[in-house]
Image 1 (cartoon, one colour):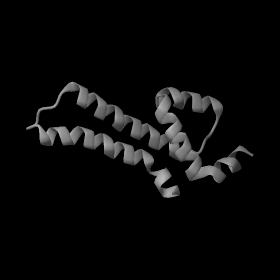
Image 2: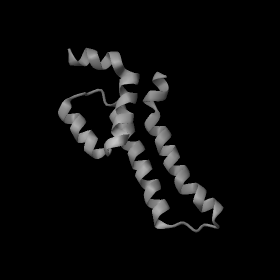
Image 3: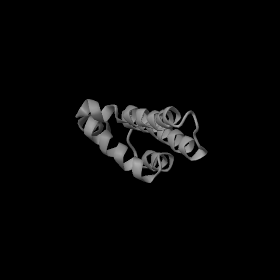
Image 4: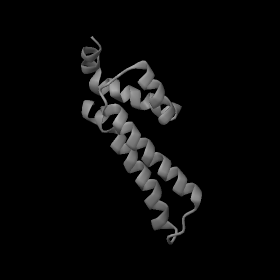
Length: 95
């Protein structure tokens, strides 16, 4: 579970790439801007989420900045993954 939690950002990025690639391959290369925007947003969310999960610094102000950067719902998904992956190490850093 820890390895999955550490790499959840990469998984989200791969999903974003699939959102970009599958319509291109199935519609004779015709894509619309909505599909491109959603795919780009998911790739960026995965990139930022990977950074957030693997960043061992944990503070309230830092979490507020990440909350804004990751949008609200993905933040809580990545926060859960971070606590699952680095629970004990975060507690040691705080004390």
